[in-house]
Image 1 (tube, rainbow, N blue to C red):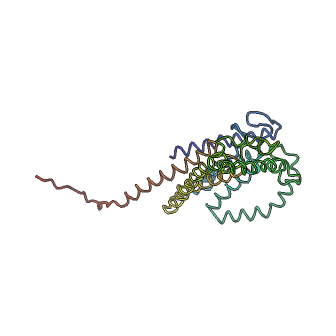
Image 2: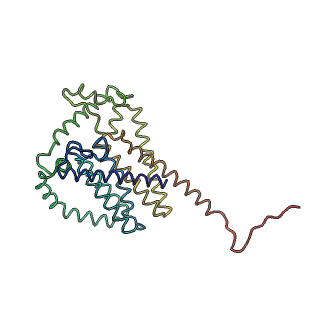
Image 3: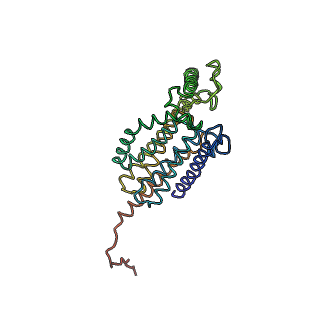
Length: 324
């Protein structure tokens, strides 16, 4: 399992560095290349939204190394830099929700690790937020497109928000119609987008930008309850792992449990604004949330059995009487 987590972190390093490099290229005017699509950073992923959700899922595991007391100073600096680079990639991707959830992931990891430090940083951020917000709003038009889009809610003209709101409203209206007509089995996987122009004249054929409403619309109550039940079961397993790690007083396991919980929670929240169930790394996090508590529970049970076995006193050699 340690090899799997190490491989996951290494994949995170590659993905975050690619996103950071794409942001640098975009900053220097390169708007279409291997890492940038139409002025927005996609990294090594096919879709822009995949970069955002991937970074959100992997940042808590970087924070686990960054906030670990057992880690060396060099390790902390390395993973701190990776967190910054990954966040820069999310900013360059042009996702407002991605920026919020990435920052929330770092804050939650800090809160679970050291509440006092998290409270101090929160107060400091609130003190300087007004000045930073005003400064960003003044110079936002000078920044590349992807960065402008990520922070466009600081502008009065709400850059593209009106168009996005109309599209989301069309999707929500379509969901009500689809769910009312096909409540049990839905319209089939991938069939929601085709219904948008039917329900809303002139509407754009897009999938539902909400993972949970999308499942209900395409698979109905039957598939929706199965999927939501699965996701809820995974959350229970994650919280149980957290509880076991706290009881065992194992610093490494506790930090891993925090990272797993925050990663899963962040990617679930991201699914409220985007359809992320088709992304591979979402199911990889689900697999980690299922497998890691199971493996740790087995190890904990073996450790308890070993601790209960009576040990012979020092210098006493047990012997077995032979029956002649």
